Image (cartoon, rainbow, N blue to C red; front, top):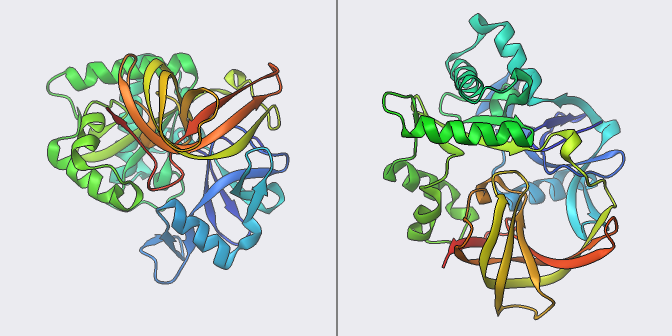
Length: 338
């Protein structure tokens, strides 16, 4: 099984997980629980009622209490992770395939599915990318969306992603378009939704979120677009790089390369790093995250304050090692403009 960021998988117990990252162990998939069968849930697919889990801490807690076999220590990432054995996967949901289904049966779509298809086709046409380079993910892909659910789209391939990013900028600058940036009220609602999973204040939140292109409103519906590298652009296999947990730190740094900031996982090369709090180790060369909310967080030349886990990265392919700051695993993790 080749699973990647944006895919979903379903287990023999009927649990639905969203896949994280692009590198996975042999015969296991790193994926976080998202939906589970529950009579008290608010979502229904066919005859089964589901509940949704939001925060990372709640996902780990749910699995620890109910399905501890899906949590395992991973020596490559030096961390406890949610991992699903491939032999326990009953269904592998793929965004591009789901969008092709929508195109084949447009009359059968509900209102939200129709809007997701329309937005995808607008981006496809505006950016002039192949139809297989874009897909629909999230609750819509697995048929568990509600009337107020978001539209989650995935774009594959570096070239296609950059073309869509440019197209989004043009669309957001045009008048009489259904694609709009978040208003101040929208940002307040987004901040309150994330409040339990973040510690930054509203002013810092607005400073970064208000200029992002990958999120906004389409015909009144929230959307988020995730950019993912294609299979032939992923040069890391499981075990090629090892990561060692070196503690927790808060740093001040200057962004020197933001070319990977639009992708998930995202990466920012940094310099002039000053450790504000935490272990004094070798030079931290980058800030990275597996969470889409940290995409487009800062630009070249900007100074940031970031807080997260310090990792020693040991790249066996290039016979080198360096340190990085990984953000997004704890509510206290942050990356704001200084």
